[in-house]
Length: 268
Image (cartoon, rainbow, N blue to C red; front, side, top):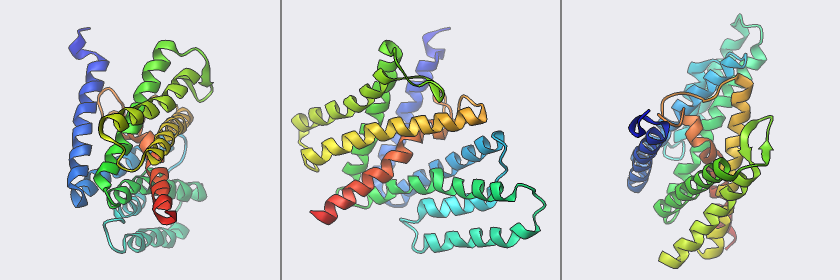
């Protein structure tokens, strides 16, 4: 197999296109960035419902996608959370007439997709709306990507000790530690090169949050995929798999980073 047709080439090409789209839309902000987050949220939610079906759950996709779409956009959409209650209430009205037997499982599966990943990804829009929002979102992107890349490279090359063999046999402690150290090194390098736009202490904390969140999100999704007996959440992104495979770390990092920056601004 030639290098051009290898999985690594597809992975790099997809990463470059995806990073350009995310960073470019984040630069413009507003509904441009909101549109990209909305697309990632809805496509990720569709993949999540696919995982649930493989695991034996049957969600109401239409209602769930409507709720998730409104929750994903609510930082830009006045009354978005209130509007999201409409398809939820419609679902509750319909449920007594449904012929499904595992109706509690179906309801919980439907709501879970609106929260993971849709509602959690909305925190990217909250971050963009903060002071120096573009720099903040760009920092989160870079730290999560650096952590994931370091974990993958070090784990593949030097990984010996299994991190969670029953959940993800390929994950190692060496890769996990590299995923924590990599963002810290990146922050120090950025500080000496350009300074720390949010203060070195805040940047180091964000590095720890993004490194740990990236690993945790990856492990959580691996557990979900194992329950569904799938290797990837989808096949939309060549070399990566699905949207959830690419955004599993960001789903956890974005809300934690926002809560930290919000607390920092509130208590300062």
